[in-house]
Image 1 (cartoon, rainbow, N blue to C red):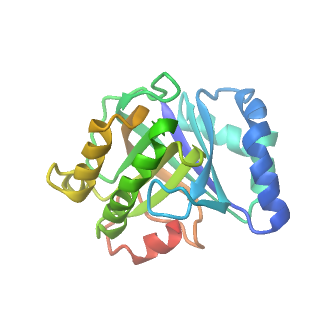
Image 2: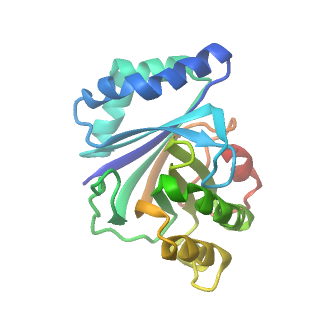
Length: 245
């Protein structure tokens, strides 16, 4: 059963941040050599609620696919490239996911293999797009409405904007208590759906991908806590919002 991991790293010192920035260009070679790893994406992050043009120089992410969660854990604890990231960072958190659905492409292919699983607990969503460079200015006129919508929703448990390249290669990762709350956020007459519809009808994306996942485990901390994203009763969003920012 395919495993997908999203690992977030927070870097404190200037030296560590410069190291992390350099890894965006160099670490991919070591990561692709890790036994068992499939697709791997190195991402920076943004300071906003979702898609954002302003980078957060302290936070970086590695998104990867694996044959199963055990293989992912062995690689993260046992290979030099992941150990270097852990040693250089001040904080690390990994979310272990199983894909339930995926449509669209990322660099010309869909990296996720949907499994026949029930989404009867918390559900994660990944929305990723490559914005046409010639249409980037038009896209960023719509972006504030998209980010405000997810930032103001009281149900979202966790959210972060990540991306491979500022302005044109962006993604939003969010976790919701259940499919109903996520569907309500994305309803056709809501502000988020309206903004996304305007973007797609305007032909601003060169490619896009939307995927949903079951949240299986969270390991590590973010903002000093381990967010409970795997099925505990939802008790509010303040802690999660602090953890994601």
